Image 1 (cartoon, one colour):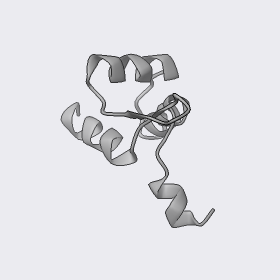
Image 2 (cartoon, one colour):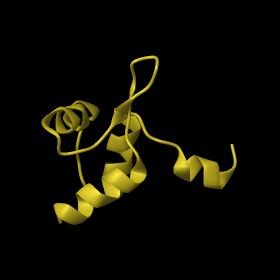
Image 3 (cartoon, rainbow, N blue to C red):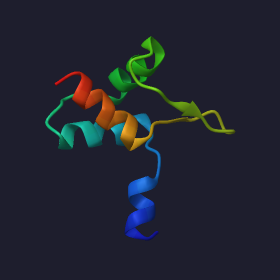
Length: 66
């Protein structure tokens, strides 16, 4: 996978948790899942039933909650 494609790839709740931790925000994958269910984070579900969250959505959340 090319570096640009990797940056654009939507994240699972586990990957989103790691991304937020890299920004200094300690949240578990379960917390990310709860944030999606509460509507704090926008996510979509794949055909296989997995949640995916865009990095831009995580960055928006960081700005809104800083």
